[in-house]
Image 1 (cartoon, each protein chain N blue to C red):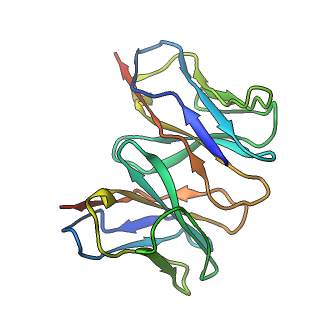
Image 2: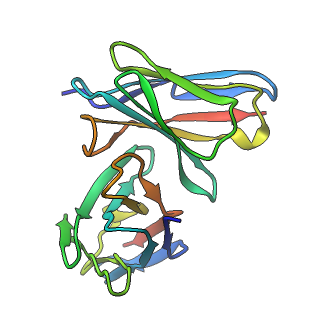
Length: 112
Length: 113
């Protein structure tokens, strides 16, 4: 069974640009979570989508947004990129509420 | 609020040494507690978990016991191997609102032969 996949693996942008990160959950999983792993800050919860709707949001500005598609895949969009947005962005999926979260390999975003 | 505090690294050990990585938490209610591991170049993997007080999670020789009286969930292994070198994250999830995981900042373990 395929695990959670994320694309691209690496993404390099300049300040002010927009970045789009993609995540495909494990087949049958309806929940997708996004986390930011910035250097020295550990993992911070960003967003949670379930059945196409945003269920919860972490303490991040509105320029971090996303969506979940009917096939349960998800996009994370970061607008007006800032240098401090450079981080590893991890996606996780679970089979709905209370399910174990399985993590993808991440997308490393570098903002120059 | 809910939070997780774990010891700063890196923790540097020789092969076969005893490992302890401390983790304490602050949470309302009765959270579930987790240890995740991130090997170099790989995504996060669940290492072990405990869902109620006095539960002991164990996997691959690692153990952690949910101590409600000390709000701790310390990770231990009796004899580490070079292959255990990774970053270890302690995390909690509130039992009554089963959404996000709240992570500690991670502890890097380096094991030398």
